[in-house]
Length: 365
Image (cartoon, rainbow, N blue to C red; front, side, top):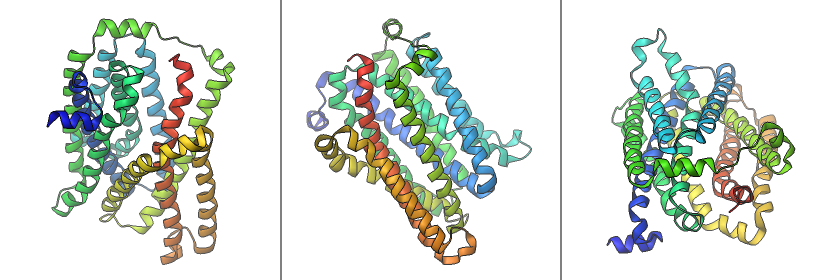
């Protein structure tokens, strides 16, 4: 049975130990991110004004994410990776526990959930950096290309299960705040399994030596290097576009759904995004990359952004885009929702894999 599973996953027997550990960790990571996202988004949208508070929350979320990744990158070449990863996960555990049990320490508990929403982005960044940092250090480039899909599927399965399970839990009377409990247990499991993983397959001395071999560039060199600068601008502009779409999506969603129905919609919609991304990456992304190349694959999402932006402006102008539009706002809602669906799915299925090919020349591999 084990041999069949390994053959199906294209994993060699000697790789089974680390692969199954990473697969379990990716499952816990997906469960954590799914529950935290739905709980934080629902509580924020129910408690705060989207027009006034959401832009500020997006700004703080970006600042927190930037600070978290900047500190992580600063320490990456200075301390062993296992210590850095375990420390990062421990901080995520502490902050998640703070959201779960911190209500008695806040005069206004709404502030707790406000900051819970702003922590979605740094939580995502840190978890992804730790997971893929471990993956890249455990396998060479040839191994990575062969087994990356098998390891990543754990996150996808966990997210689908979590997003479809959340409505069931809510139907049984589980409070939306209880999702933080599931998230806390998931991230603790992530941390414990990573400690096991680092003890078995990541050696601190070897990692430290390999980290010192990585070349660092100054800010001036970064600006002068047009290749790296263009890559950075591509990421920045894509994130800005994604944030504007999310802002429109959250605003129109709160108009269409009341406080009770909102978590149901958010969880099911996120599940659809994950499923669509999986189907497209399985059956469409490789065909596009193989037959049309990297340029077309990376231009496809910007073209879709332009197309849906024009469509959103048109539907919003003719049918309305706020509560005063009545039932006619459904046209604007569908347009914005479809734009988020396609853009998020294409980003994971096309942009991220294609972008990694542009990153290869800088790694020297």
